[in-house]
Image 1 (cartoon, rainbow, N blue to C red):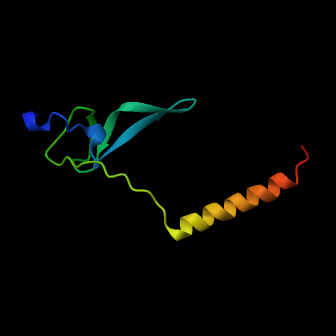
Image 2 (cartoon, rainbow, N blue to C red; image 1 turned 90 degrees about the horizontal axis):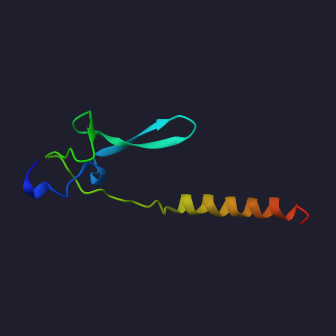
Image 3 (cartoon, helix red, strand yellow; image 1 turned 180 degrees about the vertical axis):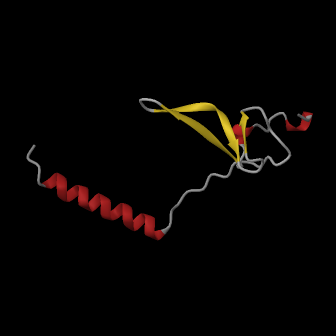
Length: 83
């Protein structure tokens, strides 16, 4: 690993996806899958294809409308209950 890539770890790479193991519930693993190299890597196994992770929120009108419909439906269901 190059000295200029010390902070470039797979955990923060946009090309790497975290692997999970399933037993009674979903447990995060310390391994990642690199979609560029098509191989399993460890957290510190960075490569020349490292890209900063992009976090995108879906605030589209369709998504907001779906949430509003869900909230209205919950309101209807909760109004039928006697507390």
